[in-house]
Length: 158
Image 1 (cartoon, rainbow, N blue to C red):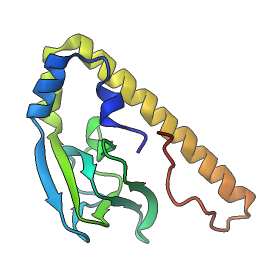
Image 2: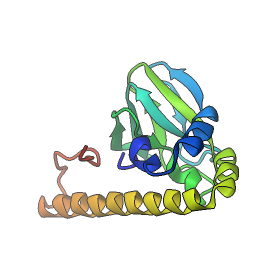
Image 3: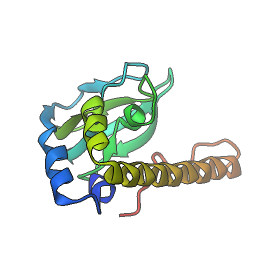
Image 4: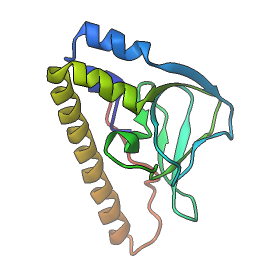
């Protein structure tokens, strides 16, 4: 996604990063495994180590994004005060991820107030960029008269 762990933690200091990464749980997911489903209660967010996940929304499971870049963060609903995931994440290849507990992160951020400000400022910036890209996709679809465009996910410039 537009949220990348490397970009997100830039400028937060080595001690914080070390403490943060110590909270990570490394997991493997086989192809076809649902990591979370739209409407599930949020407790975690994830970052991709390797592999691929598709994010799907709605009753027709519309494909809105492919998580495929190492370091991409997904499941970010848990970071923005939402109680439920807004999408479904399914592994489309054998994948390795880091799972982070939202409450543990918030506790850690509380011990580093300067880092907490940087963290949420970067999160707001990245989500704003994603929103703008969504607008472009919607605009492109309208120009095509409601026909499907070739854009199947929110592209991330890396």
